[in-house]
Image (cartoon, rainbow, N blue to C red; front, side, top):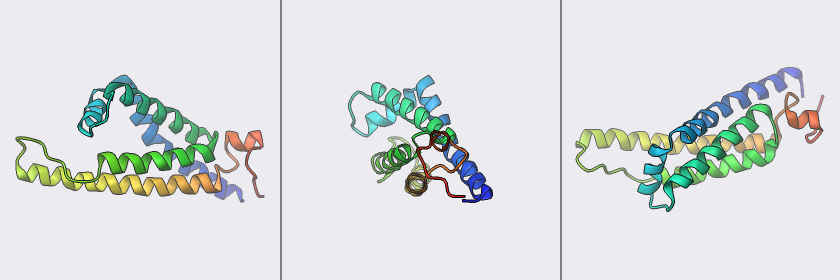
Length: 148
């Protein structure tokens, strides 16, 4: 792989890491909103799950950023994206007391969020399959094959 290809992979990893680092940090410092979504989905122990989701997102986001255990983390994030898309972003949202135009808008946004999750899953599958590139901890440790 050329240095320009490795640079592109590094840029992609940086971009793919931002959302999870940011979202994970937010859940760890203020889990209330996420706990509410978890409760709304009918899952138990909402606050504990919000903290666990935050920790998972923050740690896996950092791992993608630095290219550590990238294949494992890529598959884990792909599954996480599919799971959270299916559980939290499929179907319609009904908020008691909201006017119909607002519900239409929130349901359109929810559909976009589902597609975002599916699309990200594809990106993480690519990362898991093809690896983090030469500019990564995995490459420095010799745990990925780097073509010249």
